[in-house]
Length: 178
Image 1 (spheres, rainbow, N blue to C red):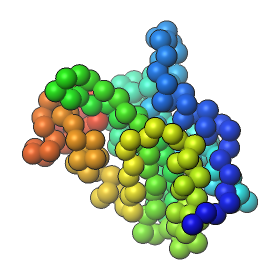
Image 2 (image 1 turned 180 degrees about the horizontal axis):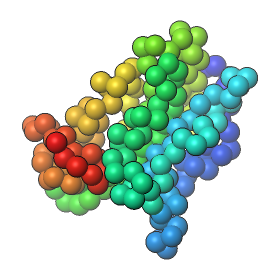
Image 3 (image 1 turned 30 degrees about the vertical axis):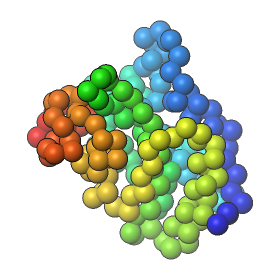
Image 4 (image 1 turned 90 degrees about the horizontal axis):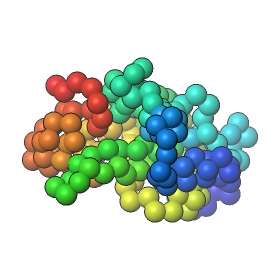
């Protein structure tokens, strides 16, 4: 079901910048986005970047100790959103970073909002060529680390536990373990 909603050029540029990892200076790396949230414009005709709803790589470990927890906290309780999160993880062979696409449709969101976001998801996904991991979350319980780890099927980089068989409560980035 298509909604006719357009995707802003800035959304595509941000996706490309997050997807393509060029050889960069340390200062450029700090400015790279770890997470970004997208919303519909006021007239509901275009998917845009939600102002102030991003995490920069340079903020991780400085002003943000747990980037995944911070990311989840940026999502509204009563409205839908799209998001990209750059997850860091380790396989048996190497350390990896992969983008995850999220459709956030919480239970408390208005039905009309859920319908518009669901029907517009294909428009944004077509612009996000190469996304391997997608997650629809209907509440905070869908955005816990175990659910995300299961989608990525990885071993935690920080505590080295296999997430498939162990309840690792690490942070998908630097921070504390519980």
